[in-house]
Length: 305
Ligand SMILES: [Zn+2]
Image (cartoon, rainbow, N blue to C red; front, side, top):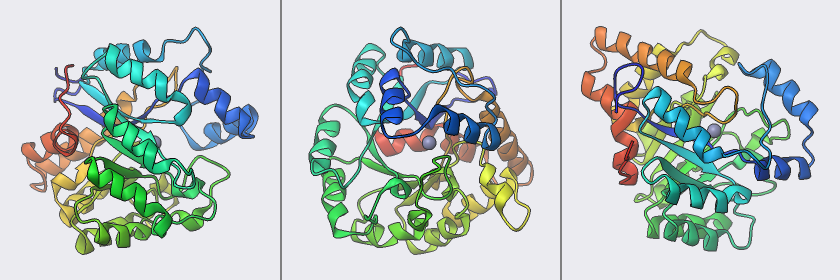
């Protein structure tokens, strides 16, 4: 399957947002008003369709993937959407790579990792800036890493700035994962959104560690908050020069409808990378790895799209 830009694509980072996700957000004190205010001022979305009972999340995403020629998408799955997503993986084999959200403060965290591995998930997602009182390098989190290592699961991490207005940015620095990456050389850690503002730290980590990767997901609007000019082309160039093309995974951070699968993210990132090919910085093989091969190699996932 070829995508709209003419290359094979697997989206390594997106989200599975269901009616249950919506309910769980509201029950944790988020209001629709504050959420839509933040999305309006900080994202390209002017409206959001809220999932209800009649909403077929799985079919909607498969339709999007087919429409844009995307073989599969990796999705972050919250606890509340877990069972629905499990059914989705069975209903559409080879289209969805699952990563389950884990909060290490949950007494069943390690058990949940074990279950996810058994259920065919390929990774977990940690969101340290949403935690209270726990750091990714705390001993309390180590049983989660041990379980991931045992079952060969990837560890995605969202550090950096975030749309979540309640975030604790003291837990936002990707350098926090350096000690676990040292203690678990067999685990693969993936920093979402190139570190979402802590790009320097993610680059420095490429010197320090061999098992820290980055994903390109989303609009990378964090670059607008840097004290110097930065664009996608520079980001990709720096990322590949520091870590190699095998360390960068394409993602869109697609989550909501009516926006759907974010073709504009693919187009912008692909055109930045094409320019780098013209400049002799990247090769066509590098592009294949970034937009398709790396995530499949890291997970062993076989797309059917
Ligand atoms: Zn995300």
